[in-house]
Length: 367
Image (cartoon, helix red, strand yellow):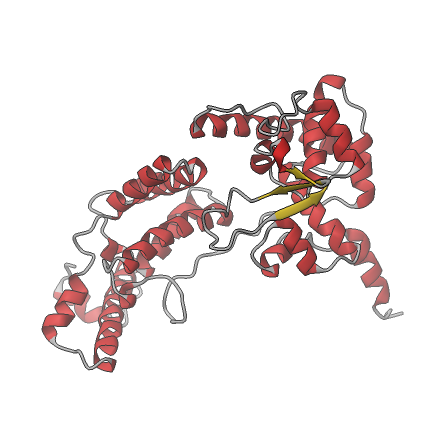
């Protein structure tokens, strides 16, 4: 950093915006050095030579190259959805700062600047959280590989002064039982019935997402239940979590009406995917089907005055209706294939207006 003597001397008490940024960056740098020294001293390994090595670690390793490697690896492993997620995060980072970005450059100060940049672009905290989690995953790999040290790790673990990824709080539209019945019975033209059927099937099938739904085959039907593993987490979990959904009469009707007529065990239940498709082609088909379902369901939701109904609404509604009906959270969590109940709780819709009115009636009246 280049400063005049006058600016340097005024740094401790300055109120100038640019100098405040400079002071913060210097403080962050000294904090990083201090953290490394503490680690070395506690392990009786402090020397200036080791300190210099620790400080230089990560200065020659390109975070852009690490993203590119990760994306290509995911494509080869046919994890197309994940590769797209990392690609979106990478494009955003390159738009913010592309030239010579190294692992050592990713500090809490840099992350906060990047967050501010995303907010100025109009990105939601949900999007910011997604980009930051992709970046954190890349940095986690670098820490595992010894490219950076624990002291250089910029995200919050148990230390103060590090960057904490914001959590998105998008609106969760969970329908009540009466609203669901209205959606089920809303009059639509026969050509659009299949799209509502897929949404209804998703709801009854434990809120299954469309990606998993379209991959279901007749061999997944076992003893009157549909049995599957979530594509989203199957490669992350050491212990594969099997999900089971009882086939209701409503689901049987939908399968008979819009399902594959050839019910051989290796055929898909719904005739959208076929064997031999590439992972990218499968993704395109699933995206197109999801888009069409959302388009038709939004139309129904707006007509009924419920707002936009999407495929996410089916999953949120499944969780919320069971919760309001007194179902055990652990049971709901198992039905949805969540690793823990904390994830399931995030699906529950907030209390509706009717419940807020009831609560208000419990409060004492002033007059």
